[in-house]
Amino acid sequence: MNVPVTFVERAHRGIGNRSTAAGEVGARRMMSHRIAASADYPAMEEMRDQARRIRLYALGHLDELLARFSDEVEGAGGHVHFAADADEAIAYIRKVAEETNVRRIVKSKSMVTEEIHLNAALEAHDLEVVETDLGEFIIQLSGDTPSHIIAPVMHKTRQDVGELFSEKLGIEYTDDPTELNNVARHHLREIFLSADMGISGCNVAIAESGSIVLVTNEGNGRLTTSAPRIHVAVMGMERIVPTLSDAAVILEVLARSATGQRLSVYTNIVTGARRPGDPDGPEEFHVVILDNGRSRVLAGDAAEVLACIRCGACLNVCPVYREAGGHAYGFTYSGPIGAVITPSLMGLAEWHDLPYASSLCGACLDACPVRIDLPGLLLKLRRDAVSEGLGPDGLEGALKWFTRLATNPGMWRGATRAGGWSAKLIARQGWIKSLPGRGSAWTDYRDLPAPAAKPFHARWKERQRES
Image 1 (cartoon, rainbow, N blue to C red):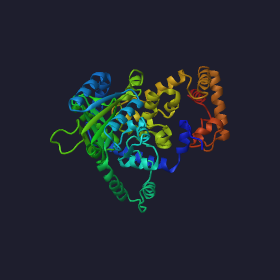
Image 2: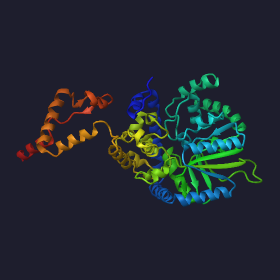
Image 3: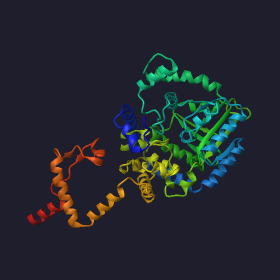
Image 4: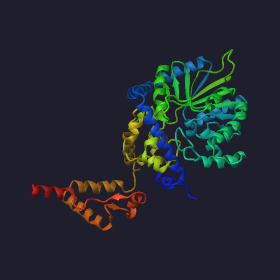
């Protein structure tokens, strides 16, 4: 079986299938929850502006904020490692595991560890790694990959999960969500208690205190960071804010934009390891601060994308994401944010098609809690792709022909008349249902409005004569 290598090929596999349909239902539901939560919060627009200012300030002062954060973490007894890329991050975590005799690792949900393929790298060195977020646990059991930034298993139905648990966990089939949740809880409880290391992500890092903020709707995050004797937090270098007050502003818009909640059920602030007299907590606390291309992005035209707080709101409103599904984007990050951040981090050479996975409708900009201009960034990446000779085949030639037509009134009138005549032959009740060649990429999935039988300039002339 050929592995699809372009967005279009991957999208063709996703459009219309059951998984994508399930994901679309979930995305629309989350979108409606966000709209309702924002409407019930009069200060939402002001808080969005404030959150944007905080995030852009942090990006402009990353060096000093990360230095202070590092000092504070170490002052609280923790350890900080700056990793230039995925290999350095993995090597450090593996080294910590070897030095502390770690065999079993539990993980809380973390997109940045998905980005560097941490699980596979650790498992290759005989370390057992268990995802404990329910969605990520399902993904791991099924050998799948996440399809959404905050709801990784949104493309699966409860029947899919019931069949999976029956096969992998040896239970009698059920598709009752409460029973399935209890099965996962029972299975994971012993794993939590016997794990040597817990690995988490980091929603927000606070420079003034060396704290990390973890936002979840499940208790697994607290167990991952407190039950094992070693806690390793992996964070993208851009996740920093100056103060606790700044973090509070981010939290005000994060949950409302992500799931429509005022605050996620478990919002944890973790500072250092266990102190003398603490009843629980890890013996060691490590923070891995990952670059992995972020410095390059920060220095370029797409730097604003690093202000993202990973709420997933842009995915939920995006018509392309909802039709094609998250797997069509081919990497950790999907939807409009993925179409920008993946080619920005990983390079246009392999990902030059992603910036074209957008209708440029602007819904993502309207939904973004920190007002990232995703449509503008997509256009900049398209410009860069064309300048590097990576644009869609035939685009440059087609635009040259269009320019020639649009700047020659006689040719334009002739072309619009010809289009109207042609439409009469193939249109039915004002719609074209099938086109040959590349036109089929549109009509295979939707009808095309037929051009007017009489072009505007002809109608204008008639109206002028009549008046």
